[in-house]
Image 1: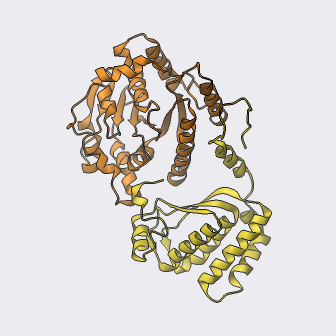
Image 2: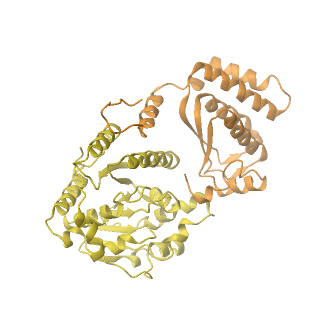
Image 3: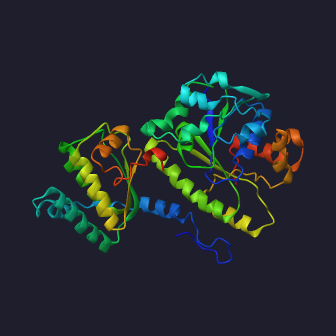
Length: 171
Length: 253
């Protein structure tokens, strides 16, 4: 937190997050740096429920609780989506998203390069968003490509993914 | 030679974006630099401030919407200083809702390998954070943020920095970033406190000269004159000349 001068006329400092974010960047990422944690995540994710979406949901819930206890959150994490999102890559994306959900309060997903996306991948992003909301975290899809928006529209989830208003601005 | 592309940006209104764009570009031109300034605000206040008042003159709107030749839109307004006006259709770009991220890349493409004979291209942005500002951020190498010394301007700057960081991340670029203290009232305590706060977060990024608030700066746009023409040698003219030297030499607080 920024230093506070008692005589200053600046009460709440709206720029304090800049220093906090810089400090967070210097801390190692728990999810990446701890192989034991990865193993626990894998168990939670893949050992219990037969339904994939339930597995995903349950995994996110459990992991987030663990992370809260450790108090090891970074403010914002960024992920760049691959051009092709398919069933072949969804498990890898799942792991990636799980790791950042575990370690961050806000996840920014850059979807600008997406040229093809299947239902599994979009379903995964939707579950991520819903899980994040329950945990009072934020997931933002930045720069969605035309194709990404088209697929989200086709599936009727563009509003839920909040890419329906992407055209109105970039922020 | 490649022109340095500078976006004059702050989504908050009334912070001195257009005043800075007009007088800093003219000051640089007077120092012998070749400068083009683009009016990216559909309100066209930059053009009016430079004495260009024809509302139907096409400008950057046709370049971005119809891919018309950028060179044809240049209006020489002072020695070494060219203007590209906003044009009557610029607001249409703000309302573009198709084209994904490509909507943000119209200006960068238009400037690419154009105006290479210029030292600087300045983009005077509108007080918003929509598609036009996105175009400026796609195109620019440098960002110049005029800041007033009041609390709400700090709040606005916080939002702007979040936006800039998003763009840096998404576009994988790192902007050269400078702040200019504009409309500065040295006798107010809040001015000093805001400046101290800014110095804490932006060390080495605040240009050394503060532009002090004066009545003359508010008066000269109505005559289509820059401060150097309206009242040569006045305190504000000296401020902007000093600011131009700071900008060229990288002199900061």
